[in-house]
Image (cartoon, rainbow over all chains, first blue to last red; front, top):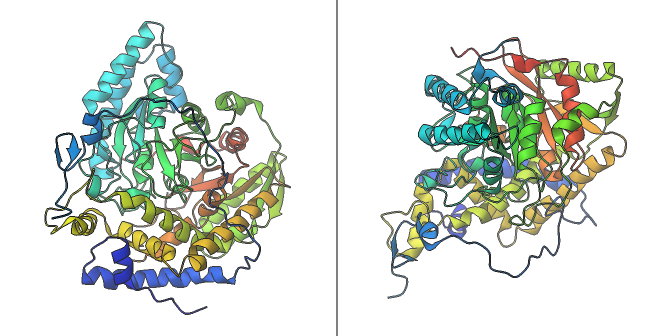
Length: 96
Length: 489
């Protein structure tokens, strides 16, 4: 079996916008190291000339008529927003 | 055979409503009382709304009295996994990040159940965001197996399976991305069906891995599962991956399709790691089919050993993308201690997601990240092509494939919790079916000496659910394991 690839957990957590504690980083690194070592076996498979499958039954060009249909009301669209004001979702300051 | 009302089949309950020996309100009251009596020990429900359910039951009785009953599901309480949107009901995915979320609309399956007159009953527990095989990853509480309260009910649709097994609903809906309907069905003595990818709309299902997720029914019997599938199957313009295909009358087809069938046994599914009691029960079922005049053929699915690896790349990649929407902005948990907008994403996600979800987001982000995409994601998609090809090749000579559903019966709570890889391997027989997009079902096929249920998996050709159900019923009729119930009283 090939060696376990290096998983830079700080880099990946940043890409995923996920704050991790030092304990989480240590635990996940070890556990995912095991999983990645297991996944290495896929490298044994000869995939030359094989097309990738994104969906088991791919459908192409799924169109609908360009007409306005029913949509959520403003009240329903905002009913789960953590903070709102004047029919908008409110967020912390983005630009000073 | 006489069983308590809460353990009767959906078909029997439907007949009683039809011939007016039972009202929907009486039935609903029975399930509410049963739920209150047993769910403190089982923990199948995240929540339920008894007043709303009784109101739906009264509406059903009124329709029937007016001669306007909507069909065999009218007035029947069906439990829903807490990832399926029902307007006005909580929708949590058993995650802290959605703890206070209420659905603003009906998912397509909920709308279809309501149109059939069924009562959307309860929000059923799961592994957070459907990521797990034991329901131990729930962010709310652990669900226990009604057959042994020290053991898991399976997962991720463990609440759906436990509720039905405990007699707290007449049927249930789950979702299946790598075995999440079939494995808990096997562990709880139920029929569970994962339809062909595209048969049932995913609109209003919280996405885990979009190219693998399918909603499907749990029933006590094959006929019950067929009746629920009937209500939820069909093309939906709101799901662009939903397929335009003719939907047969599944229940009627059960009586018409008699076999004999050619049944394939893949040797790769009977190797190392298979519990001897599970193996013996499944082999006995093979013997039953042979006795019915079916031709039993050995088939090979040579890429089986790569299914779990391929799955954990594809599913986590899709999950890392799907769960990016949980950012604390438009809905869901928002951290109170963030310093700026970017920190708000980091902190809200850190506080809202549980450990398994974080692990899968990290893994999925990694396999999609710059420099690793070809080595992992693209390769996994190519292996997926080979796995699918194995099944299609086998179907050149057989009508269906028979395997165990799970390598072991229900395991102890906590047994695999610290070892994600061991947990992932408990889906080894179910995952290939999702990668290939095929219909698969689990059917009860016996019990271990310790009294734990065992399930048999039948895998069919694409969109051939009617044939698959008939094959399953040909076993069930002679082996009605569903007539056994857990001792919760």
